[in-house]
Length: 317
Image (cartoon, rainbow, N blue to C red; front, top):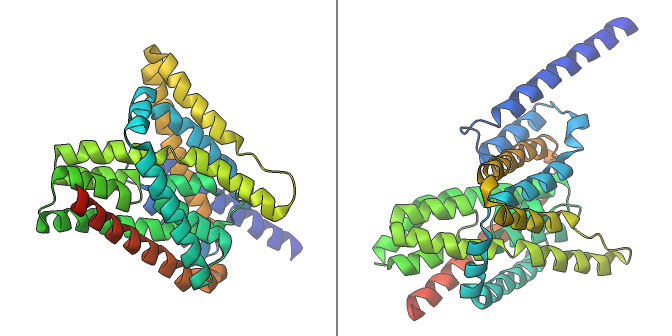
């Protein structure tokens, strides 16, 4: 009987390894988007298919992916973008983080989930959440729920924002700025901007790039803030330094552009794989416990930012 039980366990383990191997391989194909990967991971969790040996490397895979994605950024464009809108972006990021903190207290959302949702809203959605989560030692269910909220609102904004822009006769300049501020993920910003026009796409991409850069200082600020709460040694997010280094290396060696492009591609695919692992290792009971309040936080914060930025831009531009 014991032999049969052990044999069944081994067979189950082999089947689980095969399933994870196939899904990880599929993550390298374009039809598996970050949101689809997260959903697949959640489905694995729902049916009880977990691979703990792989899942424990989730945090490392997130960090490595962020570093590799840095090879796809253009330093010259980064500097120009920073010079053109640094102050406005700083004010916007501060406002979003402060509003998120206050709303988190109002809805009684746990601190780490609130930080992830606020960061994703303030900067660049899933990428920002992935970068900040290792800094604050976020749990898988906290990361998952923040990502789910971002993906849902992204999909809605990508479809609805261009229609709102046309309805109010927004210029391409105004719409580009609005999309970059009010839409979370860079990919959705690009999609909305492209749907509205070439000028809107150019402005939206540039402004979003400025916001994406705030991953670096915000990671450091949050790391120091977490140190004050824990009263122990500060956990320095060294991968952020390597992220900056990858941007510099890509700038210094333009002849290797094709190699850096491939490294950036691997970084993006690594992010997709990490989201699959995050989803597969969540606690559904924990999500149910924090779900409604967290969703209200994300939705309220997004609506406030969308409306306030719309009013500010249509009034002054």
